Length: 97
Image 1 (cartoon, helix red, strand yellow):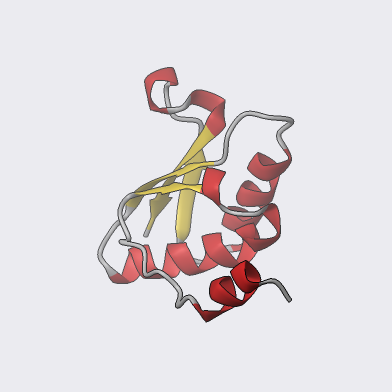
Image 2 (tube, one colour):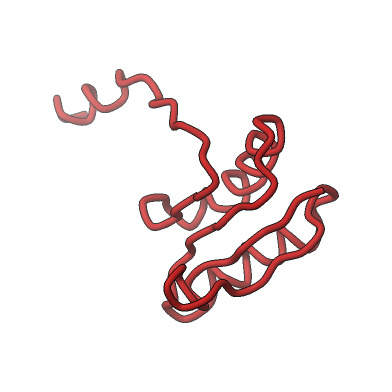
């Protein structure tokens, strides 16, 4: 193991502030399902009901993954594309109960 790998393993997780926007660009795709599910619960607990999840335009894989999660989440009332100035099809607006 390299010294820099050892230093990385010793770092503690960073607590992110929960706001009405989640930008997935900085997270690995393998974490998206768990991350979005947890984000929805934490946002709901904080009283946030209108959310924007930024998944990027790309090939649409991450967009489909996010929307598949939203389809199954019991607190999600609706979702869709925001207008262009808010991300267009590179983001998804979410309304929770």
